[in-house]
Amino acid sequence: MEKEICLDCKRLTVMVIDYSSGDTICTECGLVLEAHFIENSAEWRSFTDDDHSARDPVRVGAPTNPLLKSGGLATVIEKPKEKASSVVSKEENSSLFRSQYFIKNHEEDQIKKGFKEIQRMTEALDLDIVIKSRACEIISKFDGNNDKKLRGGKKLMALCAASVSIACRELKLSRTLKEISMVTNGVGLKDIRKAGIVIKHRLESDEVKLAHQASINTGELVRRFCSKLDMNQREIMAIQETVEKAENFDIRRTPKSVLAAVIFMISQISQINIRPIREIGIVAEVVENTIKKSVKDMYPHALKIIPKWYACEEDINKRLGGIISSWDHAKVTV
Image 1 (tube, rainbow, N blue to C red):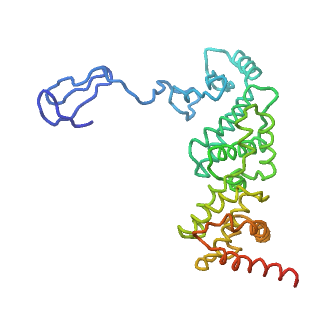
Image 2: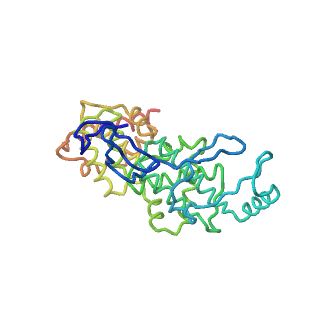
Image 3: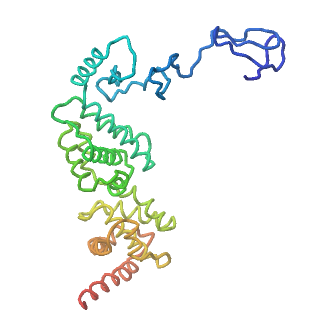
């Protein structure tokens, strides 16, 4: 019961709601302050199940789902129970249950399972609801098409993971396949990549095809990796600018390898906040040898991609050139 000021007696009094008539009444003077009150809470069942099982008493189901062809609206006939009493005989109920099983859309059941898996994955990765919605939209394109049947178990899990990955790429929210695979309950990177290829070849949407082909936006990873390495704002700005300029050159390395190499180069030039190559490799999930090769590939373009406000030509040649020479010398010595 809530206290409100009555318009008639002008006092702060307790207001009582009469649910049978829908009236809000003042307990002091009896004035009806509001009529035809509508209860917005869930409608409950007014009966108990014959088998006394603990079930949700809400009469209404989930809201309609526009991603499903049926809209998520269906009548489900349960399998008859031994002790259950009903107007319909046990034989008739069994017949209805079998009939429903044969005409039931089993593909839709798999899609609903996929929706639940996508929700679990996105929650585990702390992703926005927009990512979940887009991933569910991708999975829903398998509904009702005989050429694109869904399979349960591991294959469904891999397809859900690939859908989340594609959704992240489309919306420019970087999540690597390795991160996504950590929440798939044992599905490997190879299976997720295969599922991604299935999505690429079987879905008719050009938008999905382009999203699968698009590489992870390296710029989205800069802030995350630099934060883990505790780099200052000046270094982060230099790394972002270097990464953007590097996209104009034919550097045939993965986005993470390019970013790891740029972080190493900027760190070495700074001479203040130097980060070991091993530490950078752990954060960027790139092996040390790959970072070294990426640095060598990018070094010829260093004067063009590293901002002039951050380092002059002499510093770049002296510090980066010296490091690369030491690597080559160590290789020859071994």
